[in-house]
Image 1 (cartoon, rainbow, N blue to C red):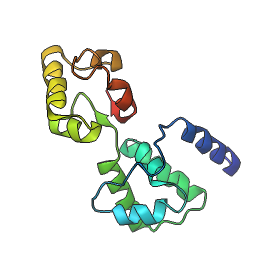
Image 2 (spheres, rainbow, N blue to C red):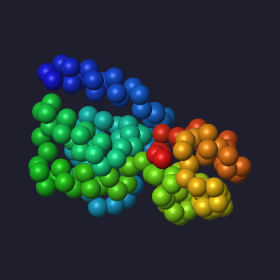
Image 3 (tube, helix red, strand yellow):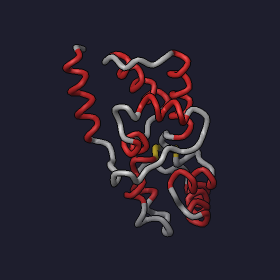
Image 4 (tube, one colour):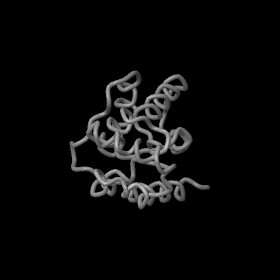
Length: 151
């Protein structure tokens, strides 16, 4: 794939992600935050970085693509960036996460997160957002966090 194609593909994919009001997001505290700030915010806003929730493979692909287009990242820094992004900015698996993880990642109350886990335990794994909307206490909120979850 040539450079122009890659840039066009990246630009198109960027539009598909959720957007937040400018300045609304902050990077979570954790090991590697400073490296992410220095390496990634030269070209991307923190809002953009926080909104893009990916798997480890997805973040790894993004880092590879960035180096392919000329971004210089030391190998050790690349590993730290990947570890940080994978730990703090990944999609959460709605069928595997604990109530505490759900509450933190999706900004739910402990009661709401408990209801998701209780429903999942009683009825089996969620297949899609329609299943998740069956949890009465959160049905109106599912669309607000649909881009942050996976099944």
